[in-house]
Image (cartoon, rainbow, N blue to C red; front, side):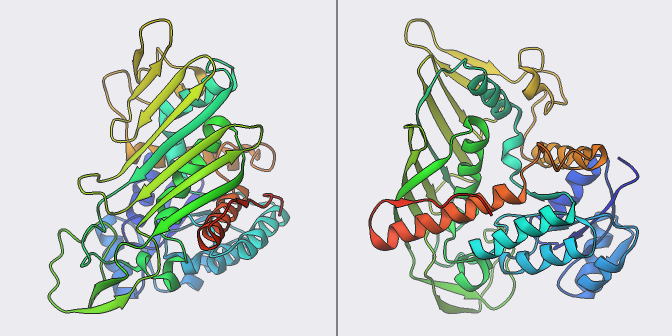
Length: 386
């Protein structure tokens, strides 16, 4: 894959993670763009990249760049992703794909018409244990999926003085905890079970209707390290917590809890799938373990070891048992799948990476969840057809 070069747009928390993941996947990174030319130069120097772009237009005009990774705040995703495709380059976009389903549907159509690879970085799909669960679900080992329960909880917005652009609806969207982390859970469950959510019933809560915004930029997850004296009060409408009941097509049921104000939980995604033959449970803070539950014999604890995993999980496993793989490895595996599809030309058929259609599905889910909360009732989810 050394013939392909990528550029990264955005140098906040997740941009450098993309750079590292690309390099580990064997993809050359031409350069990076930040919010000012000076910040671009600083980011390029820090990450060892040759180019510091001064504008988005300069990225699009760079002939050696075949793909662009978008890691900017949410409000820029739609216009940037569309511009990348129109410039004839492949695109990997951070979630959410756009600010609403009208925009995401347009991107799905544009990607289809362009003949280019268009992915959304749902990296959590690529933990080896979750790929093992996907194979066990698809081959019938778990039996019929009866119900799914889980949560995604963090504590980085625990205090009213914790602040980031993500909490502001104009920058991140009307939903925050659900859109920011809940969509990762929802995409993961769809990925491992192939179940489609048909309706939702949601209850959301903004714990802090007012937060104190520092007079300066604050990176995601950096609040505990940064001490800012000057602040200003900002009204907040996005949710800190949410609980969502799920009905899947075919009769399965589920529930999801999201929170960004759960003290002590740094980045904890959990799910438990109850099947008619066995149950499985996984926790992202112990990503190399799979609990397998039985009724009539002893339960099991499977430790990630390629010699013990199925073929689907082995494709996302690079190290032998006892050599743990975690969060950074999921980016490498996601990008590897994306660029292998580009090289093989198979991304238009059955892609092995999360596509714009997957990103569109999550936005439709978010809109149904928000409507359900506001109207206090069950709401059907629109079809993903775009």
